[in-house]
Length: 427
Image (spheres, rainbow, N blue to C red):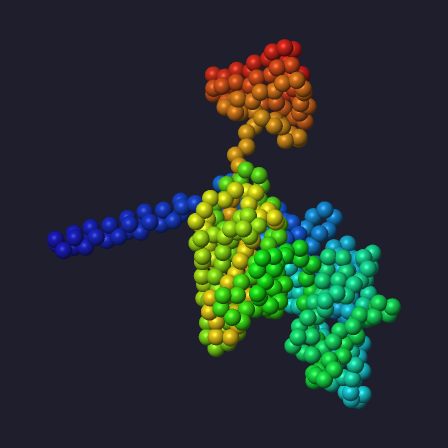
């Protein structure tokens, strides 16, 4: 009987523990999911809750349209009869590419194939004739008022840039833009071998992000401006390169909580490589003493340096994230052949500066907190709603000042509103 009582007691304890624990899980408040509150051409700004923000600088990723910014990979495209076209949200054509080629075997029944893959801030697309061909060109068309240009293996129309650099570097394909006929003509580079049947351009936005200011040892540093499977590379240990112009827009007065640098890259070889990152706050004159390192394998991965609460050994001011001041410097520490970077992205975590209630937002009710000790002198404020005074102590002071409002609520217990020298409330 005693054993039965003991077992019953322990069973009760277990049930009680499970019940209490489950109540804790039920009552535990879930952390706030980050939400995007604004976008610019090069950044996304997230609300992390409790006044905390994160601005994510990624290079050019958001397409400007009618005063707003749209993730570029969300714009519409169509594929029809060997033609690929990209469109503005209103349906106007940004640019289209129609395949025009001569088959080596005229009896071949193969049909052209176009494949599009989205990436953050752009697209890859491939054109595949599925048979050997003697010649290839793209017929171009656009509704844009911007002239089509071809510079450094990139076709540009407005903010959009189509990069044919991989065709040149890896496939021995020479690309020539014929402005008169509005065509891109492809040929195998003299003295080289290759095929025109498969071409794979990268479609993105022209990036304002810059590089090679004080350190320029890495090859193709522009490839680190977007995640496009093309690489900036360093062949020798100790080689460094810098990147800047991230266009963060950290608000004035914000306190910096941390900085995270995300590098997508790999080691081009049979073993891993190590990359070191340092940050500058004064245009490259000084760099952080906390040098952070990560190891990359032989396949693409994204490694994070720092984090949301990591200040890299110093206290930062908001103006140190301007395009003039902020730099990211990457150094190759070790690698069997080449150390490669596909994309550099920087997240700045900050808490917005506290604001008082002494300035009217311009629409709706205006609530003034007396603890802010607001003082108004020589002027007037027209309120599109009610004037509401809240507080338990302190005052609101008006000197030759006028509030014009639809209504007035005075929610004070031990505070006052002082009107002097003709100050008025007009309701």
